[in-house]
Image 1: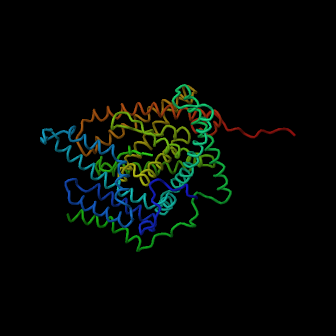
Image 2: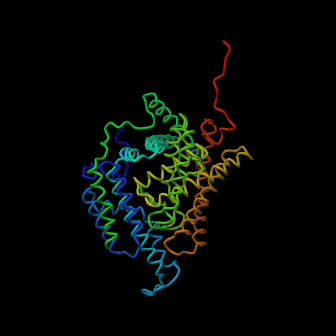
Image 3: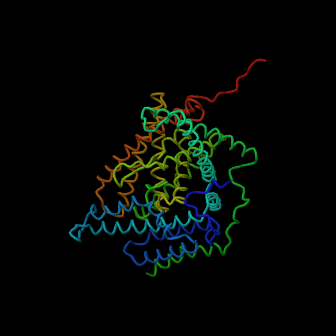
Length: 251
Length: 227
């Protein structure tokens, strides 16, 4: 696989977190997120501790806070929902700066903003330190059925084929006088979408048959990937959810 | 690229209901894996990957419906018609898992909820509607268009059901249901147009690739020619 299989959130540098096998990172992220979500929303100090923990992991992974903050804007629609809740919520209301706000709505807004942000930050750290190929190998080692990893492998290969073919077809349309502002030309675009699908399929089918004839049985060969996780690596990454669990119980 | 998350995030629906839906989704996907293995032959395996990639790409297109409210295409009906309901559900589920892990779109603990709405509900409804219409009227584009609209709206109401069961804040459910349905009818029309043109083109050139048409058309068979 060439450089084309990097994904936009992957940060290509070296750090202890980049070197960890993918399966332990997936497991640690999942457990941490579960702990965050089941923490009662009134435990403000626990959420502060989680934030400190995420910051520490980000420092180990050498991910800059600015990068995290910019990418975390992905959850903006939910922050907007959160802002709307104090006004729309029902039940007991308080007045603050002349605004009538629902207490339940305020707690709800805090709940979504805090848990959503922590979850997004944890996922971003996973994505920043794991390449697509490693992620699929990690899922495979976590005993995810091979149907999934097979579909995911092809999906990631096809994404590049689709993007490349779409670019070529767009240039072909433009050089034949197509202009996307001309609505009556929309048929050219619509037919193009179907043709794109077929072209990508026929190329992909050839690739698949070539892989089959070279011994592919639904799993990627293990060459070149990081070796499976050792017990100490499991223990090291277990610290992330364990510390969070400890905080949740103690604070 | 400016991706905006529209899948359910962590903390919107409480942990109890999220866990229940995760179990339901896991069991249903397990069933799909069993049935899908039977379907997944040399033709369907690359097709499933392409459908997943296609859905991945179209889910990046966000429709700005109102300020702050947007939605994206779901692709459940398209997947079900092209690769069948079992593999189709697996395709959409794969897209959701990869988006969650690599693009931080959709909460990890809300994965069960998202898979239930988009991979299971959307695909199942899309397939049933498409097959029902194809029985009455052999017109693929019409069937796919209607199936897309219905499946998107039903999938959006899946969120309303989940919110009613375990929403972390009391909201008027009628408002939520109305807002979700209104937004998603528009999305469904956009999705229906894209899905219908795509399937119509594929059905014209390679009808053997369209799962929903398998009963009515046969792939070209090699014919005996007397020497």
